[in-house]
Amino acid sequence: MRRRVAAALLAACVLSACSTTPPRGGASYKDDGPGANPPPNLDRTADAQPRAEPLSRAANRPYEVFGKRYVPLVSVQPFHQRGIASWYGRRFNGQPTSSGERYDMYAMSAAHPVLPIPSYARVTNLANGRSVVVRINDRGPFHSGRIIDLSYAAAHKLGYVAAGSTRVATDSLVPGGRTEPVVLRIVREALQNVRRHAVSRRAAIRAAQEDGRWVVEVRDDGRGFDVGAVAARGRRNFGLQFMRERAELIGAEFEVRSRPDGGTVVRIAIPRGAEESR
Image (cartoon, rainbow, N blue to C red; front, side, top):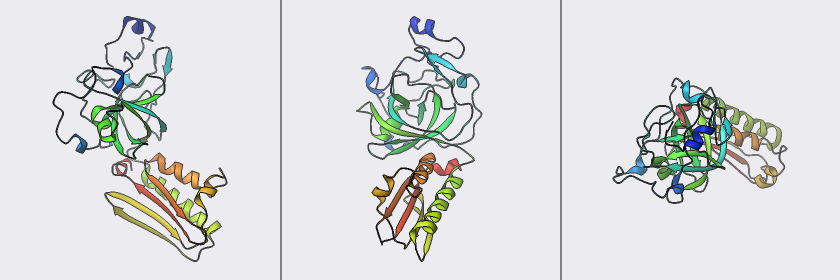
């Protein structure tokens, strides 16, 4: 991990796998920010490409920072979290990360307190809907209320460099495993709703590529319903919450369009990059 830290923090840390990372992130340091010569077309930087990698033994041990103990996940598994993201730039550029790799502020990477190192996650800016795929190779942030620290490049693509932080959704991507089963479970739930509630004469499933994304739709000609009113009923909501949570698990967009006596469309849009988690 980055080794610049005050002696007091070193004394307070647990020496076994102790984090020596000071708090950091976009607006926290007046001397942090972009480098003098950022690459051209930074907004076109390719997302990280999820793949199975051996996990680091050293970087995934329990550790303590500022009196708080962190226990990293020891396997790549479904994980969803919402909270504040910050970013870090030239102040740490070139310094060792928790993985032992050098931090590259222009790579699509991130620091997270407990996600396995290395692993991959989709991060979505909830303020503007933009999303990126990053490789987790570092620990942090350790500011209260912040859940993930993105590289300068990733924060730039999400559009919050100037603000320093933003509210995001973070979803782990599991190479080898989850996209197809999750989509099939959503489709099955949608079809069960058609059978139980729609009183429809016909239902159809459509799958197509749109703007680089896979889109799956389940459409019926049944009686329909008021989506807002049904969603407000909590658990008695025709499986809407179940489907929405399953979609979030793989970073997919989920939408239900319906109206009384006008039929229903359940739509799942799997963003570019999530296919690699299959």
